[in-house]
Amino acid sequence: NVLSDIGVEKYEVTITDANGCTLVIDDVDIFEPPVLEVSIRPVNVISCYGATTGSISAEAIGGRPFNNIKQYNYQWFNADTGLPVGSDNFLLENIGSAKYYVVVSDAIGTTATSDTYLLTQPDILELTLNADYTSCGDANDWTITSEVIGGTPPFTFACSNGANSTLFTVV
Image (cartoon, rainbow, N blue to C red):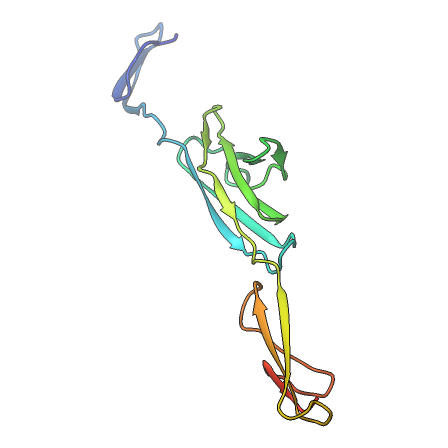
């Protein structure tokens, strides 16, 4: 038999067979699964401008998971193009700077869409060298000052004469 159009609550079920034997189940709890929600968190930042070393993770809760091994289905998207990226995994790896979102579905087909996540990258690493001399510039009186723009500090400097600071003298 089918009991339909019932609400979410606790029920008592009594089953009686042809001989009058009964089975009473007094605690049948019909409940709605919690709302399926998903958010994105960073796992690995992009190390250098133009690199694809980033990774982000989807954190889904609620809904009706499939099982303990595979709880949800994941479909990642590039938010700028709307095209799918990655595979059916909670982790999206080896990606570059872009806006991403993920759609998660559970065992009963409920879906949840994350907010868009912007994975950033450092600005392009640029170096400006300014040379100056103290006297006439015809001896070891030169100084080269470096100025770094972009990248990710702290910076390491090295010069062919063994100097390793932002100020190189006696070149």
